[in-house]
Length: 256
Image 1 (cartoon, one colour):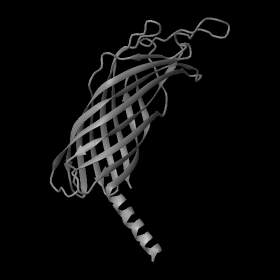
Image 2: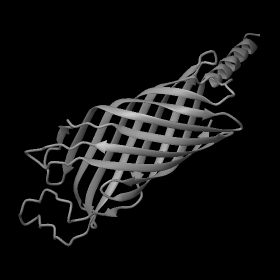
Image 3: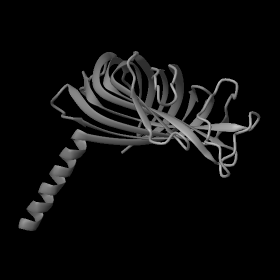
């Protein structure tokens, strides 16, 4: 009898857990238009919590991006720290081909309101979250010799709203504004020495939008993100100019 009661309790707990939590994971690609254009392979995961009696849900979302191939850089616009001259280091020739490799990631945790599952009409869902974003550009030669790398890290608050169109095939249209409260750029390099980490003073607003279509346990998402990256002055190293990265991406998702 106790064994049956235990099984019943576990079954009720599992059902209740399933009603409140939802997990999804996905795979996709991004086209990063920054200093160069480059395709990346992306992996994403999200877990959300929705109390059936509440009209809001909390979520945590993660995404990682890695380059598929290298992209040749424009030697006319790119400058790097020259290696010290000795018997082991030779200068990089002006016509030598150098390539860039992009990688990055993002993490977001927040709350979405007006998300009760019984809503059958088109409605808005306000959103507020803590958001972190990273984007890095690694420079190397065709011989795979590592030269240097710059990495941006942005942490701040994101706010926005989504338009939900319920149905057997549900559609979400969402827009967000990201305000970085803390932004830094770190310069690594074969000849840089100790990595130089600099805070970015001229922080700018960043924007992202998405269209998501969900049918059953599968979803397809189209994203567009604009990152306005600030510059950094490094008197003892190399200064980095402000830049903009525009990143359209797609994601195929499975909901467990």
